[in-house]
Image (tube, rainbow, N blue to C red; front, side, top):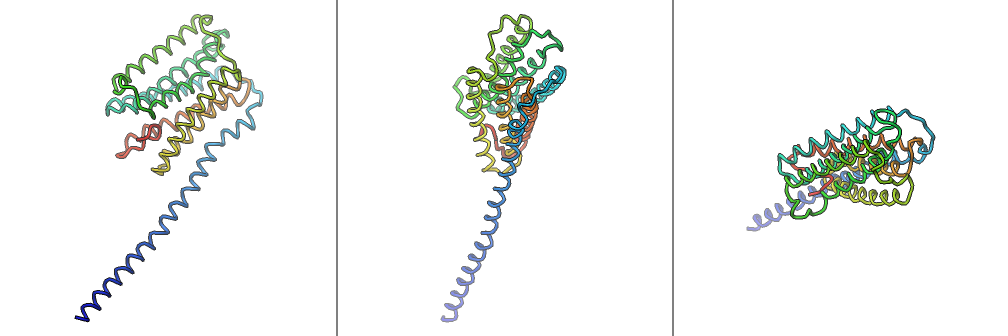
Length: 293
């Protein structure tokens, strides 16, 4: 009996040692995982803020760039936004996913505004008197896109809680944007006065836009901290770039290099936000970096 008792205690002691060894072996793994997160966030933060540094260092440099450069550059950006819109809208409708359709709608409206912005480039297809459309579409693209994207992170009203109503809403929004743009191109005098860069009106729109992008960036950061996916970090970086581009669009003119850097950031931001969001739909477990769960 004693031998059995000693044997039982020995087995229990051995089991306790193995449990402690197992816990000890796992501690470095968890520490290493946490330690790796900080450098990733630092690198991501640097990548997100590099354009801001460029704007501060070079933004006020005076430049004279041909209108054709603006025409083709903005046209390419519009195509990128349109491609993202079609992909997200089609996939969202196929899977009856209202949040994805909303994100697609945001890119669709941005694509329409950018297309009008590019078409209204003075001296390319239209005369130099079409600055109203140019300024209106240039200043509205990023704030309007942010506003629609933000709808994906808040509860929708009952009438809009379905794919079909959202598709109708997207169609109406695109029709309104197109009608305003065409009207402005045909009869520029019909457009209201657009606030100039750095005016109180422009700065008000800027403040609202930055608040919306901050909300979206906070959501994307929270998603990345949960998933640790590089694609979710890219979405966060892209949102910061779009916010930086918004500052340039509403505070600078086409004679400043910062305004052109902002246009480049629009294209880059749309690409590195739109592509990861579209690819996220292929994952068995979607992270939804813009809209959360």
